[in-house]
Amino acid sequence: MLEARGAVDPGCDVVCITVRPDLRAYGPAVALRERLDALSRAELAGLAVVVVVTIAGAGLWYARSLPRPVDVAMSGAPAAPSGAGSAVPGSASVSASATPAQLVVDVAGLVRRPGVYAFPPGSRVIDAIRRAGGALPRAELGSLNLAAPLTDGTQIVVSDGSVAPSTGASGSSGTGVAGAPVNINSASESELEALTGVGPVTANAIIQYRTEHGPFATVDDLLNVSGIGPATLEELRSQVTV
Image (cartoon, rainbow, N blue to C red; front, side):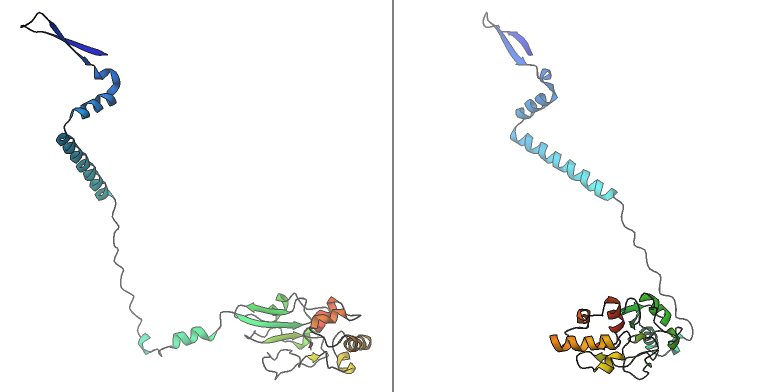
């Protein structure tokens, strides 16, 4: 939209008409741009400074309006009770380290899942047997003290009662631990027959296999012997070695 304004020049018979666009017809954005174009460089610089100062002031006000953390003074440590100063230095650390955090025990023999297990302090022999899956039907638990407390680093062997427990073996708990395991690569037929689960036929089969195929590499190689299955192998695992 155009806006026309007229003026009469007294020196001539000509009517001068000035035509200017009406900026309001193009919206506020176009009108603002036209006004900015009309400003000089100095005026534009001053306007920019005003805008920057306004934004900086708003940011400073917002930063100051944020909540500030409150420092809470910690109260002093409670005074030591009377008589605490007479305690022997280092006694607390000694008592704390006297009992291990857990007891590691080897459960072997006639149990369903022989192996090394960890127990909390205060556990008993019966807890170790139950953790290993319980005793097998042929096991004789009467030779063990099921109420005895477990000791870290010991071994519990559940047998059928035919082997006398050893009470002086290194690393044993003294609660039904059998003697040294039998080496199946050098044991005689009579020594093999003394093992739980091995009779004359099985002992002879072990010696025959050893003669034909050479020494056993592992105890698990007994599965290759005729007459020895997984159940018999589990009975023999804690009694033999290679």
